[in-house]
Image (cartoon, rainbow over all chains, first blue to last red; front, side, top):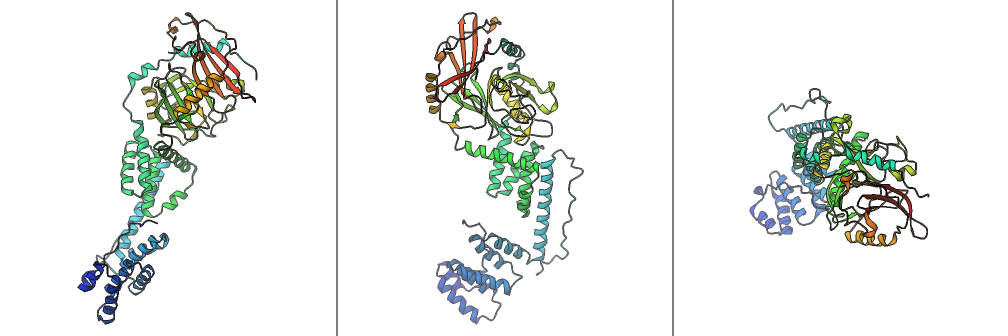
Amino acid sequence: MATMGLSVLAPAVADVNHSIKSLIETGNYLEAINALNAEIASSPNDKFELYFVRARVYDLNDQSEKAKTAYQDLITQYPGRPEAYNNLARLHSREGNLDQATALLRAGIYTQVSYRILFDNLTEIYTEQAARALQSALSPDAPDASPALPISTLREIISPRIGQK
Amino acid sequence: MTLRSFSKQTAITFLSVLTGLGFLHLKAQASPVDPEKYEQAIVTATRLISVGAWENALSTLNTLTDEFPQSRVGHLLKADVFAALAGTGAQNSQLKSVEIESLRQQIKLRWRNHQEFSDKNKGLVPDKLIKVSSQRSLILYVDLPAARLYIFRNNGQGLVSEADYYVTIGKKGFGKEREGDLKTPVGIYSISGYKPGSTLHERYGHGALTLDYPNPLDQHLERTGYGIWIHGTEPGWINRGPFASDGCITLSNNDFKDLVTRFDLQSGTRVVIDDQPIWKPVNWIEATGHSLVSELSFDHPITASPVKEESFVNSVHDEKSVDHGLTEILLYPGSGAELVTQRLLLSDMQRKTTVTEYWTRNDDEIWQLTHRMESDFFVK
């Protein structure tokens, strides 16, 4: 099927060293993977960025299955980071597995409490608007003063911080 | 079947109706309406929804429902967009009330019509319309399965579609046989009059064009019922669903207004109501017309009667004795006949007769006359 037009979350290549970055940009994916493997083995720091870039390079190198496994591992290891959910959803949608893709995107949004609330509230309003439009479709002359459905209460964000899951 | 000549009473009825018709006065009242705009918005929104362009679809629909707050299909399409955005689109499409289903059918019919006319039926004309009177020049054609009323003009070279409108027909569909069966008749009729909305119950909307159902053929087949009209829409609605009338053909009030003001409809303007439309290229129509004329035999006696209104004596020499005086050849939709022809005969300067003849083909493929109606009037 045609690509769904889901955009890729850009890897934070800034954190990946310059030589690896240029290997990727020039299409030397196998060499880039080797370099990333070496970096992962030796780096003492948090390896999210390295794992993430490696998953993307698998995808660029047409190794879809490896890419999917890599993203799935990232989700297991870093459940609060939304990036891997998005890119794994993209791979699934490309293969036509739309149900898996939507479940992943929803889970990705839900990694952030604030985004989750925003998303749920937006859904709530759209649902309400759908219900009202449907009511108008059935009886367009019904007075506006008495809407057919009660206005639902949107959730409030209590903490200004974007919290983790 | 027996050959029947219809009595003078029929002719007199036609004449009395004729005097009450002043279609021309409608032109003066013509107000600017753009009947295509409404449907165009529905079609555009449907197309935008089909490609997931939610924001553009919404803005098209908001414009539509601002201008036409009673557009139920507009509100329903909006509900679809919001449901899609909410991720609950499946729930909406599963909502199967009778009212919603009927709105969906209407959208589907309008959409299908748009698709086919930008493609399939372009340049084609209905196979029933073999020859349309060049005197009247206009003919109405109802494509029942497509829920569509067309107005065609004979421009001398052939038929050209001038306009077409979404229509509602009987609750039980078409093929009227009995009074109260809630069906729209299938056959060939004529406009017999115009009634402005101010003289009618509000459910007729902007007005009504009356039709001559049951026609002589229907009467012979003992079909019953009356008051089958083409009319506007009741308050509270832009259009009804495709199956919602008691047998009438109804248009939106804007469309009805467009039909009666933009076109010079006359008493006697034909209305062909077709249950099995087939669209054919113009050369097929011409070839069929030529072969029909050569196959028909007009050796039956005619009872010509004097024309009562002097003013009806107009020059018709161009129609006389060309193709037996045939002014009209229409294939008959539905059952009871296969062909109807109309001839205009001028016996002398004082007398003229319109002869309507119904034909069927027998087992030997020979056309046989089954009914004839003579009426002593001429509509110009």
